[in-house]
Length: 193
View (tube, rainbow, N blue to C red):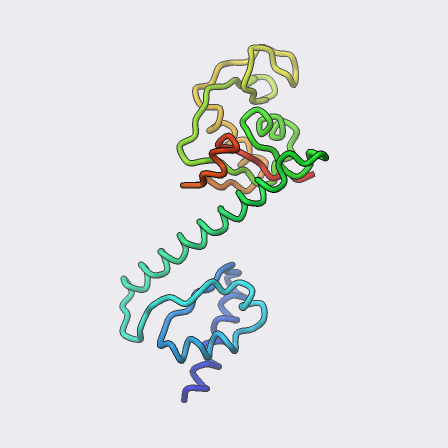
């Protein structure tokens, strides 16, 4: 019976992943059963497996939801931390192609459509400028560095930068409690090229 449960569980995980494309996997259940499922996971599922969650066979939907929500929050924090670590490692490279940190360099990268992933400290705001003619964002004005038109003051150019990054289909991470990003100026970008 135990082997059958393991086969069913691993097959179900593979089928659900193929249909839904989920990117992280957590498994809950009795310790021995979970250990056996972990050993028999498809190799791809092993690469996206995060960890075991503490749930027993009698766990209800609310308990399951809380455990999954907690695991999702933990995964998000780990991914953001890894992105900030990568940003910290690439900022200042002589080629200037991998990443930038600080408001002015990020706004310049956005104006040149180079932002692949935008990282912003939660709550970070700053006044800035926006060009009504070409939508360029800048920390200084009033003359647009892109088209030379007169720019307008905006109360929160960081929010405008997030909107611009979303329009460019960049990935956006609003990071909570990431001191390394705060040290880098509260905002940074991993670049497309």
